[in-house]
Image 1 (cartoon, rainbow, N blue to C red):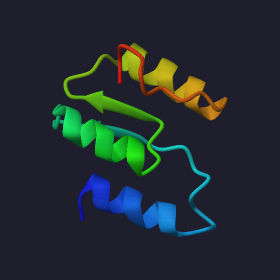
Image 2 (image 1 turned 30 degrees about the vertical axis):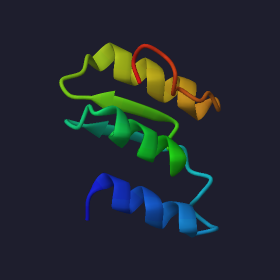
Image 3 (image 1 turned 135 degrees about the vertical axis):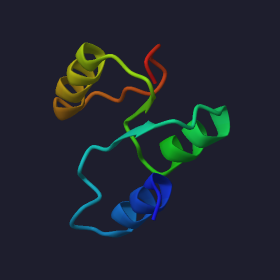
Image 4 (image 1 turned 90 degrees about the horizontal axis):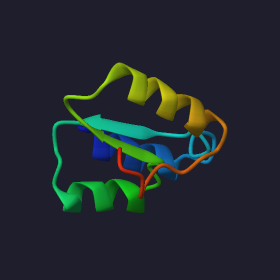
Length: 73
């Protein structure tokens, strides 16, 4: 089960689909980012990452912000 498969399963579950999800992955291709966005991911981070950036993004996501389109997604 990879991250995209998990995200797909979460989005199909009415009880879980409201949970904000960000992908943290080594896959940086645009098609992977687009697929994650299509499945409802609010952010997409490519390894390696900076701790401060990830923590800031997590706080913003908890507040409801969509991170796709930012320089870090």
